[in-house]
Amino acid sequence: MTTPASSSANSLSGTPVVPGVAAGPVLHVRGEVSPDAIARFGDGDFADAEAALAAYDEAAVAVAETFSAKAADAQGAAAEVLTASAGLARDKGLRSAVAKNLQSGQGPVKAVQGAVEQFVTIFTNMGGLMAERVTDLRDIERRVVAHLVGEPPPGVPTPSEPSILVAEDLAPSDTSGLDPALVTALVTERGGATSHTAIIARQLGIPCVVGAAGCMEIPAGAFVVVDGETGVVEQGADPDEASARVEESRRLREELASWNGPASTSDGLPIKLLANVADGPSAASAGTEPVQGVGLFRTELCFLNRKDEPSVEEQADIYSDVLSPYSDGRYVVVRTLDAGSDKPIAFATQEGEENPALGVRGLRLSFGNPGLMDRQLDGIAAAAERTGTETWVMAPMVATVAEAADFAEKVHARGLKAGVMVEIPSAALLAHRMLEVVDFLSIGTNDLTQYAMAADRMATDLAHLTDPWQPAVLQLIAITAHAGVEAGKPVGVCGEAAADPLLATALIGMGISSLSMAARAVRPVGAQLGKVSFETCEAAAEAALGAPDPMAARAAVRELLGH
Ligand code: PEP
Ligand code: MG
Image 1 (cartoon, helix red, strand yellow):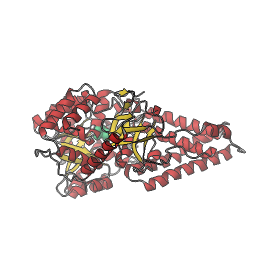
Image 2 (image 1 turned 135 degrees about the vertical axis):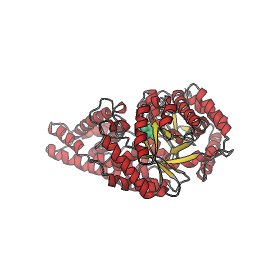
Image 3 (image 1 turned 45 degrees about the vertical axis):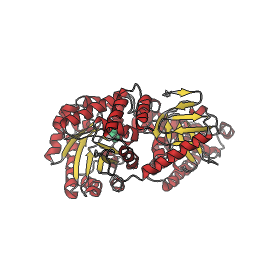
Image 4 (image 1 turned 90 degrees about the horizontal axis):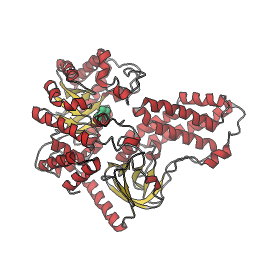
């Protein structure tokens, strides 16, 4: 079970993932197909296993088409996850497992449930991003079963008035068609900062709290106030007070959205705000935001569906598309392949590891396959030359100074700036020595948190541990930032932590020189930084570092900033 940070008779709290305040009646998401309908259906009335398989095919196609139709109406990350769900509903492996169960004499509902269970076990054992897809699989199971037994698809009921959606967890198909005018906040019992729920809420721009233990016990229709900055979900608040808070939060969000850069503290200390991108189109659209460049180009995301390694020339073309929009004097930090663990890449990932998050991933792939890294660096260098964009290159998952030195040598030999990511606590503790051999560091707070807290970043029940506000994580960031200040070299943050306006102030106070985040997060972060002096940022850093736990750290910084 997720441990709430704090709760009282009338309030409970979870991990705040999208700031803002909303108030309204609770609307529960109906998760399951009616057991009565399943009992009535029994094994169905099919002549043989083949006829039952035909019924499954029809149901699976109908479910896949619903996902595809929703994907067509959605954009960005939402469209991607829905397209992936459509593919999963049509998956041949899943169909074969269903066929096998039918042939062994099971009814269609049991056959589907058994087949999905089999895949859930496989995905769970793979861990990381694949484990996160278990929610999608369960969603497909519910929908296919509902179709088979003739029930409406389970999921989000259409609200008749602006409501707060409360669920155990939400699947992409639940959240994709949401109208932010009618669903004004999301609260889930499970899920972490990187769950689908959080991603979609961020995209819709509605407040969101995840890992809120006990939220399903709030009665349907109860009036609640959700605070996406504190993570508190409060029952029984005064409606007038609640609407004043909602109005103030709306005004604040509008003000943030109108911020246009360039970023600096209120007393004029310039701060670099950068975008995290995945490919040419996302780089082009991020380039229109008030950013000074790209702080993290996740190259592996270009190759998720590739079976074979792309040639140097093909890589140069792909990278040029990302670099081109920034040839106007801005710069791009390209990260070499971070394949493995939560991002399996067919041509690079090591198969059959017991514990892939601690296995041969990221830079470690080059130990047994140095050509993979060399060819990628050649592709990056060719793209840098072709576009004329200032290009920095960094390696993920660096654990030792020797690894950093080897990598830097290869990058420097190609005339580019070399850096490493600080994602492993050993790299943070030795940041000062890393900086003797590289030009810059970039802190990946997602993995740094995972490895410092020994908590899988995708584990929905561990959201309270995989929180970058954890004191131990903040210490590691502070050590790294301090090393950068001492060495006079840039140290940025490119994990999710950089997108949190509150935490951003503390990071700048620690001496972090750039923050890289999803393009959508840039304006709120820039606007927040512009309101505080560097001295206040330093006080925020001190307050956060001195707090005993994440909730206390957030509260201390909020108080300092007068929120
Ligand atoms: C991180 O670990 O914080 C990071 C930015 O890398 P990724 O999320 O791609 O692992
Ligand atoms: Mg990482």
